[in-house]
Amino acid sequence: MSIDNNKIDSAELSAMRDAFIAVSGRDPEVVTRLAGAGSNRRYFRLSDGEGVSLIAVVGAPLREARDFVELDGVFREAGINVPKVVLADLPLYLQEDLGDRSLFDCIADDRKRLPDGELSEGTIGLLEETMRSLAGIQAVAVDRWLPCVGGRKLSRRQVMWDLNYFKYEMAMPAGVEFDANALEDDFEALADRIMALCSRPDLSGFMYRDCQSRNVMVKDGVPWWIDFQGGMYGPSLYDAVSFLWQAKARFPQELRARLLDVWMREAAALRGIRKPELLLTGLDEMILFRTLQVLGAYGFRGLVERKAHFIESIPPALATLAELVAGGKLDSFTELRRVAEGLLSSPRFADLPGVEKCSAGLRVKVFSFSYKKGYPEDLSGNGGGFMFDCRGMHNPGRYAEYKSLTGLDEPVRAFLRERGEADRFVEMALDIVSPSVSTYLRRGFSNLQIGFGCTGGQHRSVYCAQAVGERLRKEFPEANVEIIHREQEGGRG
Image (cartoon, rainbow, N blue to C red; front, side):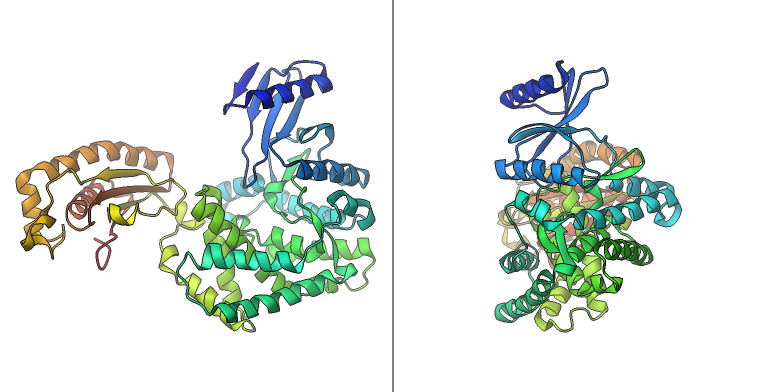
């Protein structure tokens, strides 16, 4: 048996093997771990080399696994495209293999090969069919699926928790100041509007909760839904907004409107609603709520846990927030609008590369910093790059005549040059980083970070960062080399 990608816990491997044999009658020849996302669930593809391929799901809490299996049965009976669960030995279960291509992959591939980020008619057709299918899954009779999730419904507590998640994981780390009581009042007012939608059966049904193109697989040219175990009863509009305003999907406004209309009309027809536009009640509030919610998640998963996918999602989510502010959608939430404006102007995100920036070429950021204040923050998702410790050199800061100067001032530069050690350090650092810059350019990478640290971030690190940055600018003119002296006033060289 061949095991690909990552080490697998021996007990889990044994359980997956036994389950596969129970279904197929044969040992799996290949076990491959598949990419995960934000949860602790782990996915493995098991195949026997003769055409049998199944997906094993492990690591999910028992209740979550049970919810998926029971919902899967209900949705399959209702004619919804979901993977068939072929064996459930909870919390482990085996499901039908839908392949590797998601709807998000279709979108991303079109953006790479078509001009101006356009989407092909085939992908647009898939998106329209997905919106019709979403209306279908939302319209499944409540009494058929609600028991599968223990009667779970979107609650006011959960709405407030999501809003405060935004406050604690995005606004506060960005250094945005606010009146806590006034902001809580705005959260309460927004929660009132969201919960008003929940109270209307004609506007509510199965709420997918994580409705996005990454959770739609494309098999045999049609969309299939996965990862719906977090579903609950709630406003149907929430899912349509989640899908169409997904940060990294970057649907243009015209296409959003077209797809929203497809969903609205299909949902109205399935529910017998004579005025389809009623399904768009509270649209602005729902877009705002979802935007704040995902920014909180991106703040935690990206800025705290350092998961690149979530870091990359921050710029387009902030762009949506900017559109809402510019369109006056926050005008009735005075303090929340002030927080949003502060977030959008926060220096923490000033250098965060958006999707458009990332495709424009290699950005090399060369830092000087003080170890006392921690490593430079990396918001690119690349993981921080190279870090060089300059503290082994003789420190000009020990002498009174240099204390008020920095590594940019000629007396300090002369001091470091005369001893020779700083220039040797610079040359050795260049020998290490230059090949990576060359490789990153050749392979089309977007970001590389290089840091030089010393005790105060004032003399030795500044000298080295400036020297290396200037040399890289000359050696690689096609790269955007930025020199940042973090601890110094002005900050850049």
